[in-house]
Amino acid sequence: MDVDVIVMGAGAAGMMCAATAGQRGRRVLLVDHAPRLAEKIRISGGGRCNFTNRDIRPEAFLSRNPHFCRSALSRYSAQDFIELVERHGIAYHERELGQLFCNDSAQQIITMLRAECDAAAVQWLMPAAIVAVEHYSADGQDGYQVTTAQGTYTAQSLVVATGGLSIPKVGATPLGLRIAEQFGLAIVPPKPALVPLAADPEWLARFGVLAGSSFSARTACAEDRLAPRFREAALITHRGLSGPSILQISSYWQQAGGRGSILIDLLPDCDVEAWLALHRRDAQLCSALLSEHLPRRFATSFAEVHGWTQSMAQLSNTTVATIAQTLKAWRIQPSGSLGYSKAEVTLGGVDTQELAQQTMMARRAPGLYFIGEVVDVTGWLGGYNFQWAWSSGYVAGMAA
Image (cartoon, rainbow, N blue to C red; front, side, top):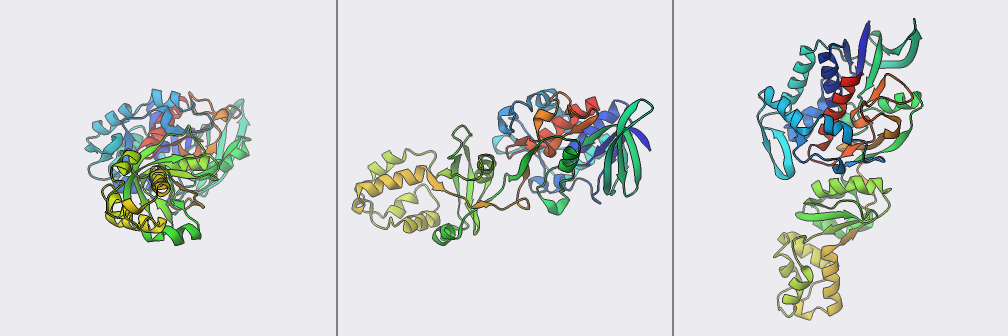
């Protein structure tokens, strides 16, 4: 079969790209190896799909070239996708920090994208394992040949939307990165991102008693002082640290090489030194005072683990100073992450220096495009990565 565009990967970016190209009158074939459509969308947002964020901006994306995402995000904005959702009659609601979710089910987003593809006469080939991808030149025309378990197909343009390495249980593979390497494109080494962090046995032996404790915190990356700080919930687990603020900072910790510490401000809204000074001569235990601002179980265990078992009046000035410093910058050295199986997305991917930001086409391989998670653009938690899928898919679909 000869078509104009072959899109590899029927996830968020792939379906957006296929629908956009098809609506331009291009003959599009959408290929995916999975037996079930868009599993990553289906399980996202607790099954309700956090499909975008009202606060989309380039500063919320990590990349070796942090300016690369600007063009796509401006050409297809969060408001553009919201309008698409509204045209399909999908009810949604806004949660904290601008996050938008379906009222009903993530399946509504999948159904919407499928409908957009069908309206654009996109042809489907799934499940179909991809065996080989090759460039060809014949009769003065260049293009790409894709060999699958169900046959061989050729197209003028090939769009790689095969995703990253996160959540392998729903079908993640390194196929897109292998194709990029095949055509000589540089790869930023991939790492798990938006991922829980692991602690070493010594830390767990000391702080494991806090497992299950959740609290509001502000996290920072000690090795990257220019990285943003995240004010959201944190969670101590039996393996280390999790919760939204930890997932957010994990991407920056990974980008910094995964060698430094993270800092947790346990009382982000409190002038701790002034607060402790106010209660300096109190007869109450330090743990009781901490429980005014922290969950009681956490406050009690945290004080005991650090040896702050006396009353405030009995503590030395040095100890009180240490308490203040620890509460505002609890320094933790993770031993690693919990890996791709627990990661929301992949950090790294096809180097953006290899791609034209206006089209997502490879500079050294005309007609070859890379979009979505396979590219070295990683957003914050909260709908940012879906918006990158919609935006990068749209601009490639307008060019392929």
